[in-house]
Length: 176
Ligand SMILES: [Mg+2]
Image (cartoon, rainbow, N blue to C red):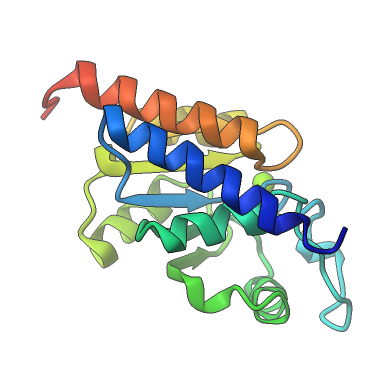
């Protein structure tokens, strides 16, 4: 029961492997935090609590790491200190090559510009998961393949994300 993330990881690895056989993979996968990786607003929580991720989140992160695909965070949480504490407690903090966590009036376009500058990964080589429509809309306009999650990131959304990424990179050519 406690090892269910291992089964999720295996399935996520298979999804990545089958996507890579037919098309290109994203170089960087970016996750929102609240209601994407974990089922709460961390600004409403205490640092003393022990947070929990959505059931599929850890397996998906570990599969990406195993396959050599970088991961990053783009969060508009106003309480970066709580978010960072939780990432430490969950033992996933060191996995992320960029952690952009601050409130902003833009719908994460600023977050993605910074992630692009930090990592050098072009927008059209990124895949993004978030639970808010307006973020998905704004960030996809930048050329990032963006997936709206319903009840946190899970294998279904992950599969959809890789499929949409391959569609986008197959048909678009170079936009700019
Ligand atoms: Mg969110």
